[in-house]
Amino acid sequence: MTAERLVVIGGDAAGMSAASQARRLKGPDELSIVAFERGNFTSYSACGIPYWVGGDVAERDHLIARTPEEHRARGIDLRMRTEVTEIDVAGQRVRAMDLGSGESYWTGFDKLVIATGARPVRPALPGMDAPGVHGVQTLDDGQALLESLDRVPGSRRAVVVGAGYIGVEMAEAMLKHGFEVTVLNRGEQPMATLDPDMGRLVHDAMDGLGITTVNRAEVTAIRTGSDGRVRAVATGDASYPADVVVLGIGVEPETTLARAVGLPLGPHGGLLTDLSMRVVGHDNIWAGGDCVEVLDLVAGRTRHIALGTHANKHGQIIGSNVGGGYGTFPGVVGTAVSKVCDLEIARTGLREKDARAVGLRYVTATIESTGRAGYYPGARPMTVKMLAEYRTGRLLGVQIVGRDGAAKRVDIAAVALTAGMTVEQMTALDLGYAPPFSPVWDPVLVAARKAVTAVRRAGTA
Image (cartoon, rainbow, N blue to C red; front, side, top):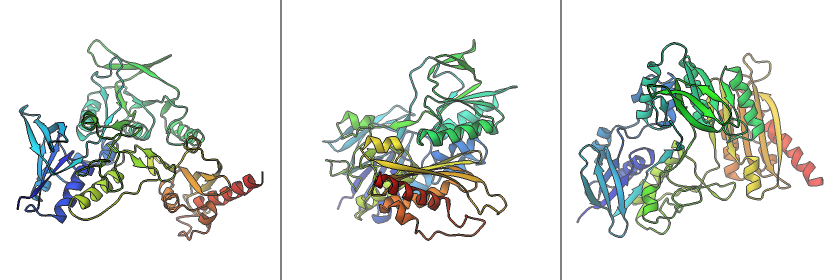
C-alpha cells in the first residue's frame, strides 16, 4: 500500500505544527510529509524579535522552538531555502525552486497545507530600500538590524515608521540601544487597535519615556546621503534625521500562490477556510496561520490577525484532520497584548468604530484603578475601557492601559467575550484576590459595574 503524501508550504508556526501533529497520528508508512521553507529557519517566534533586538532575549537561537534537523529526525522531509513558485490544483502538485542552485522541480501531493504567512507592508517610496532601513519580520531581519545598529557611531537617531504593536515594541528596543527615538504615526494616536482616547494614554506614556511620537504623519520618502545610506525620513511637512529606520507598518496575508490559482480569498486578502481549516471548496487543501482570515466571534465577520497563538492552533487542527483525527477552529475575539518599557497595552473584542461598522449600538465605561490594593507597596494606575451592547448589556470589548500586571487582565474579558457574557454577569465573576495582586474589586469588575450602570441608563433614555 502506497503512503499518502502531505505537502506543506511554509516552515514556521502553522506549517510545521500541522506537519508535526500529522506525523504524531500517522507514521511514514501511512503518510509521507514534504515541507518547503524558503528561509533559513523554521519554527521560530517572530513575535520575540523586538525583545531579542532590545536585549531582553540574549541569543537569536532562543527564539527557535525546533530546528530543521529536529523536524527531519521526526520523519518530515523538510527542504530549506526552497520556495514554492506554483500550485497545480488540478494536477495535485507544486513546483518548487532550490534558491541555492536555481533548480526547479514538481512534487505531487494527496493533501496540501498552505502556510505561507504574511508579508510586511513596505510602501513603494523613494529610498525605501536604502541601507539602514529595516523590517523586522524574520530572524534574518533582526540580525541585519542588530548589525546595522552596531555600525552607527556617535549621536544616534532612530525613526520608527508605524505605531502599532511592532512599532512601539521596536521604539523600546531602539531606546535600549541608546538611540534618540522618533515614531512617525499616520493615525490619530498610536496603537490604532485601541480607541483614540486609550491611544492617547499610550502617547503620553511614550513621551514620558523620552520617545517622540508624531501623529498624522504621512511618510513621503526616505532621504539618503552621498554614500546611499539613510539620513532622514520625510513627511508632507517635515524631515526627521535618522541613522536607522525601522518599519513597523504592519503585514498583509501572503497569498500570491493562492490568488494565482483562484483559491477563495476574503475581503482582507486572506484565504477562506471552514471550521476544520480546509480551504473552502477544496477537499484536499488546508490553510492556516497568517495567510488566512478568521471569524471574529463578536463582530460576526472575518478578520486578518497575524499572531503566533492562532497559527499554532491552526496547525494543530490541520494536522489532526490530515492525520485522521478531528479538530475545529471556531474563531477569535481579537485579543492582543504588548508593551513599551513598563507600560502594558491590551485589547480584546471590538473598538467603538468596529461596533459601528457592524451596526451595533453600544455604551462605554472607562475607569481608573490600580493593579494591587491601593495601600499595598508598588500599586500603579491602570485604565480600563469597556464596551457593552445597548440594552442587552452583552460585552463587546475591553481595552486596558497600565502597569504592574495590567495587560494579562484582558484574558478575563477574552473568556467573557467567548462565553457571550453580559457585563452584569461579569460583576459576579469569582476572581482571585489578595492585596499584592488586586484590589478587593478587580479593575475589570469595576469597569463592568460601571458598564452595567451605563446600560441601565441607556435603556431608560
